[in-house]
Length: 369
Image (tube, rainbow, N blue to C red):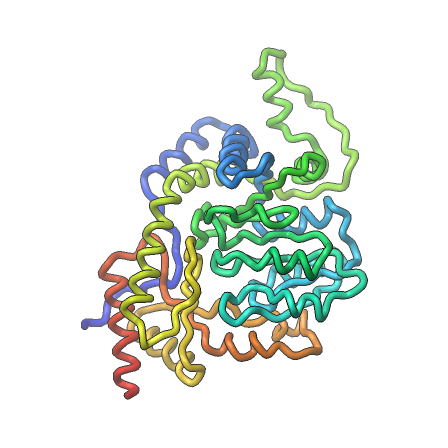
C-alpha cells in the first residue's frame, strides 16, 4: 500500500457548514458573550444527560475547580486515578489540597476501589472518578470503599447512557478532540439546586450575568438593570454564545458521530485480532487504547509515524510526573501503560483511513516475524 501524503491524526474534530452558519448567526446578532445560546445549550444538555441543572463553563478542568470551590473543599485530601490527564491531579493543588493518586484496574484502566480503600486518609473528602475512554468507573464498589464526595469526570463519556448519574456531580468536556467538540469548553450537571445556584454566581466573579439582566428587559420591562452586588468570591469561567452555538450543532450530530466511532472500534477489534489486544468496549470510544507487547510499543509508534499515521499514549501515569509524584507502588499502571498505544479514531476518518491503519499495523507485526 502506498504511503499517504497527508498525516492521519490520532484525534480530530469534524465540522462543516452548519457550524459556520451557527457562528454567523451569533456574530451577526451582536451578542457574542454569555447569552441565549448558552441558556439553550445548558437546558438541552441537562435534559439529555438526565440532570435538572447544567452550568456551561470554559473547560472540564475549570468545572471541577469550580465545584471544589463551591463545595468548600480546601486543604483536604483528594483521591484520583493515575491513568488520567494531568488536570485531575493538579486541580486539587489549585485548592491547597493534597492529591492522592491511586492505581487502576488492568482491564478498564479506571480507578481501583481496592487501592482507594488502601490509601484513603482520614481527611480524604473528595474522589475524582474518571470514566476512562467512556468506560464507567466502578461506582458501586467505590461507594462501598469511600463515603465522601465523588466528582464523576465525564470528559470521555459524552454521551453514553447513564453517564453523569453515578457521582455527586458530573463534569463534562467539549475540548477540541472530544466526542462533542466546540474548541474548548465544559459543562457541570447536577440535581443539587443549592450547588447549581452557587455555581451560577461564581462563573463571573460573583456578578449577576449581563444577559440575565438583559432578559428582564426582554420580558417587558424597559432596559435592563445595570446595578449588581457581589456577595461571593467568583471567577471567570463562563461559556460564550460563540462556543455554545457550535455545541448545539455538535449535539445534533452526536449520535451519528458516536456510531462512526463505534464502527472504527469494531473494525479494529475484528481485523486486528491477534495483532493487538483491544481495549474494553466503549460506547463513546473517546480513545482507542490498544495494547501491544511493551517491547513493540514505541517501535510501532515510530513505524506508524513514518507511514503518516499519528498515534498517542493515553496516558502517562500521573504518579510519574514530578509535580505530583507519589512514594508508593502502582503495579497495574506501571505494567499496563508501557503497552498502551492509541490508534486513530475520530469522525473525520474514512473507510480508506481505517483500511490504512489496519494494513500498516498488520505489516509491522508480520515484518517483525
